[in-house]
Length: 371
Image (tube, rainbow, N blue to C red; front, side):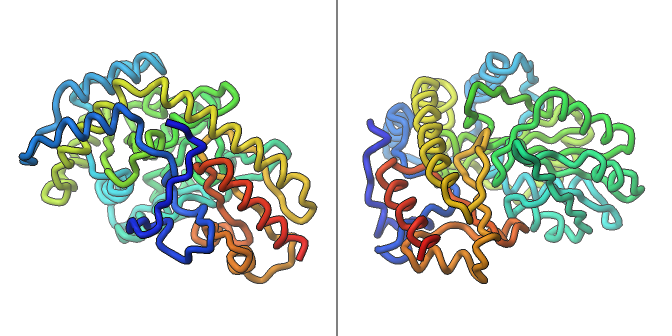
């Protein structure tokens, strides 16, 4: 397969491509790449004519465990796993299970909007911690978090790691500093690590569960990295048995069985697709570099180079536009509104598309900036 191949997704009930046919949709966080061949083959092989209820096979947990050990030297116990239909459900279960009515939740902003919703869905107070924009990207505000964590009612930190939409990676030292603050103030951690496989420039992901195993719920899924967002399928790793039992108790009766086709796809993704993933990440890096090179030359548009994810976080505040989303849409490109992430004046661009699509999109955005 070629990542340059443009697949027409119009008329396919795609959430991303279901709008106007003349608009390039670089919005919702799925990719325009075809499934890894091994994943597609696994799904076809499972289509035996009967699609009954399945249990999660031990071989899937074993494959994930082996991969975590190989990539991070993190040895996980099979008992730590809890399978979910998606990471968003895990965010919501964490807010409900790990906090009480009078307690509060901290989340860094701007951030993927389910992080903003989950505490409120649970009836909890949410404290927003603004990320600090520096000359070399975005930094976590440790001093600000220290002040919030010191509140006796602060109980949970929701961490997006790597960060969506900022594209930032937290290194081991940063994670250890966060863990130290959480330990000192008895704050638990829910860490969404769904983008951990999409890292550039030789950076290495460090799972938060390795740093603070006794207070962390780690959530992840193969859906982003392996082009299978529509299949769902995710899991939590929760080393602390008390936290795990609370999490599981909230999920009882609410979590459906994972589709048999999703289980087959997850098995193939984690067992047979490392070479495909490496090729995809290299392609995404080239996409990132291409767009960064072009947009860096636009005087009224500010952009930093993401270390991870397939998103660019574009700052349109110096354009003077009242509605950057509509202005760009009027020129034939749809991006995701920054206000959804608690980042007004910004737009998020998904660059998990063939290069030719991104060339057209960049042309249109540049025309909007010079109109």
